[in-house]
Image (cartoon, rainbow, N blue to C red; front, side, top):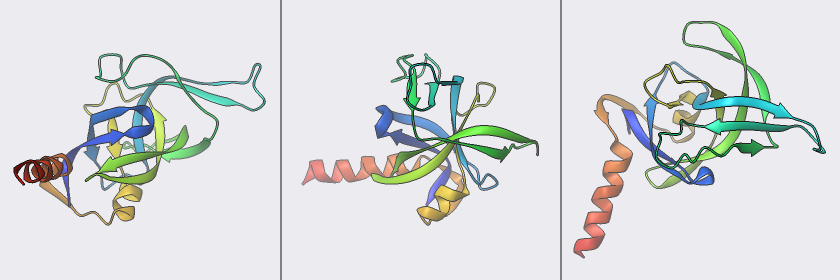
Length: 151
């Protein structure tokens, strides 16, 4: 079970506790990036370069991240417009488990949450969403850690 909002970890980016909105209406998950561009000069193949999250986010050090594995896909936004966006595949952690998920990269600076979790992740993890709850994954891990400490 997931709540309408969850805290997620991205081990490949050394980021933890990133606020995410669970969106059953979105198919593809999304993560906030800026300065999204392709570099080809001096590269054997194109490299996608982005700044992940905003500098104020804990763990975001402002250094650009590079990806050699990426796709350009048509993604339908919440207002119904189709936009071309770069998509990467990375691991997200919920309940201490790792799920390999496609994330579209977009500027979400005008959105409240930097990460959106879509149906492709929900199906993969066989999650059910309880919109009255929040941060169920982190709360579960905290309870498990407390139980281990007591024993």
